[in-house]
Image 1 (cartoon, rainbow, N blue to C red):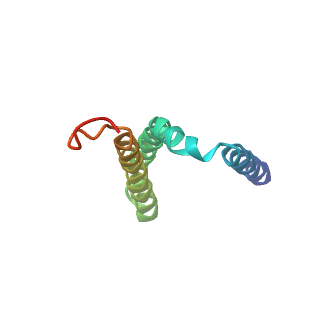
Image 2 (tube, rainbow, N blue to C red):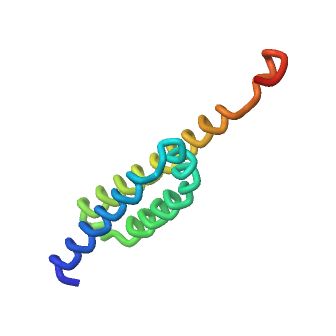
Image 3 (tube, rainbow, N blue to C red):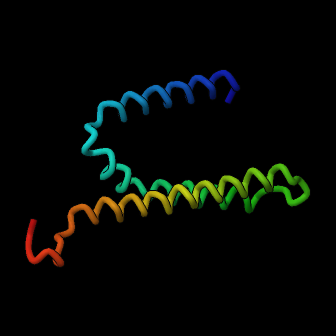
Length: 100
């Protein structure tokens, strides 16, 4: 694929993603992001595969691969933290002696 074609596809995907996300109501953002945690896992596995195929003699490839794995893991962990906080908002308070 030519560089200009790849850039065009990237820009089109970014614009489409922005338009789709901007039309989602605010109340649905957290549940949608929580439901997409599996995508973060796929990104993490992809980063680990790419790091595994990096040339050991090239420190730039290893550094970029390590950063990709680190950021992918942080993104996945952060998604689960957000999910836990969101679910905690819907739990009943048993210490107060009843339902809200």
